Length: 185
Image (tube, rainbow, N blue to C red; front, top):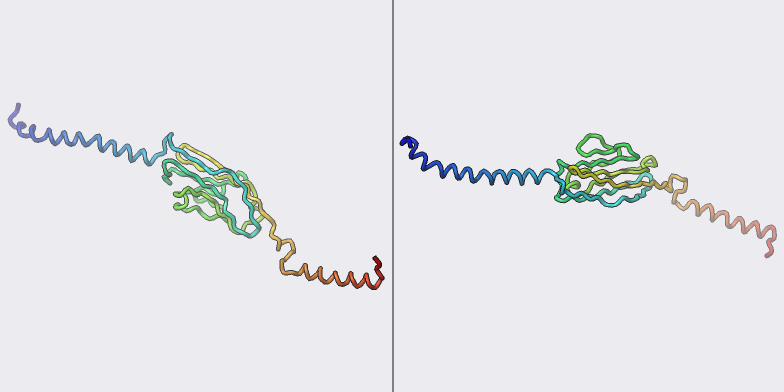
């Protein structure tokens, strides 16, 4: 053996061995961190059941869409897509938003809430809404049917008591006419 490398040979094998032993640990940590951020085939996605909602013209309504994922969702792998009668109205992480909808906050999404809020609804807002959640390769949808009820005030039936006033005036006239024309039982 070359005397020049004799001292190096005794010092470095331990150092190199320590580095070599730490390499699998670094690799395992990298694999665990990477696996934790990417959905796999064992990822589970579950949505609540489809349902119906009703709202009066001019009111606000929330179309509920709650989901759970196992393991907990990483927002970078989550897509929320709302459609109304087949037309896209909200796509999370994109700029397309329904004019009357409130964007879904990251905090709500983290808690599994992808509900859509509509304000000042009109008859045109009635329809079939679909909430689609995609997490990795898993995708589920639910349907919310929104029915808009007419506002009683828009039908000319203001609740100011005026209909009772008109009825109260007709009653005495009927009694007076019956008395004048001699009603006999």
